[in-house]
Length: 205
Length: 168
Image (cartoon, rainbow over all chains, first blue to last red; front, side):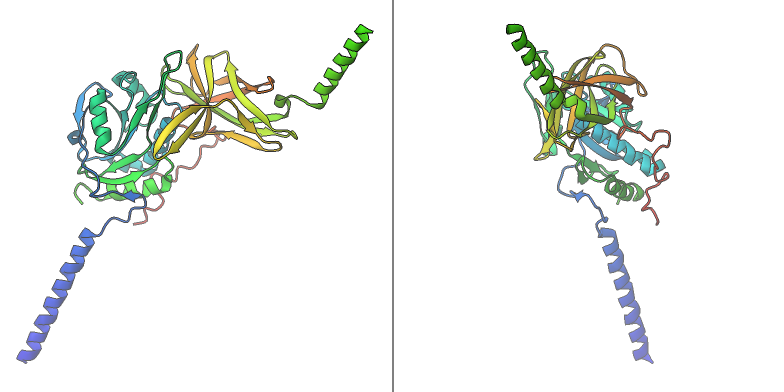
């Protein structure tokens, strides 16, 4: 009688421990991302810049939102608009969930991109896009933080110039943790899939 | 003697012209569109060129009464960096095609004399290396358009409000 009791207690304990272990595993299991997972390999979202309404903002102002960070400039007629148009389509496909996300478009051309120019530019793509500007030193600090780069090319006779820049899109979760790296050629299905995972998991996961 | 020699020469030239039609005569343009950006920002123009001739032809650029400056450009991404370079000419192979599309070849349009709005049609005159020209109507599309939107009467499916993999 006593022996059977002990056996049952042991079994119960075993079940409890297994349950805890499984639960623990589930909590720590990485989200099944399709894009390049950079969790733990890049620093948290942090910057001191000016948004397209002329307001000083920091990375902390976007806590609670899933952030898509992209470097570019408004005089870029091809790749930057294509990338922002792609992100707009992705946001549309996310439906109401997209309200939990922000596209942060950081200008690598501080000489020409004012908050007003940036405002007209980003809003032509998506209502959830924010244009960020700052002096060269601040933008360079942010770019270096994510091992990104940009170079102003020599000007032509009429003073026009191009800026070569990293094409990566960095994705941060609601806690400002770097999670994913995407390229402009990433499939929209993969972006929608992964953003859905980040947006559906709530604030802290 | 002299006049007859001249007429012979002229005749030969005309004949040569007849045999070797200009590049523009063999090229058919389609999917021509412009991505319109706010204000005075430069815009990108895209088009598909098909050559039904037996010889390759080459696009050298375009001119426009609307844009003071048009340049043939190529975007590339190497080592994670996006770059834009000027291109002298883009070959359209014999019985083949060349595609000017986002993230590749495009015409960069600068200094518009009047604002161009989505829905407008803008005529760009494509120029080829043999000096021939092909006037082409380009449709102006919004900044966030993905393509020429030929089927804009029937908007493309947006897969509903939610991603189609949201079955859970």
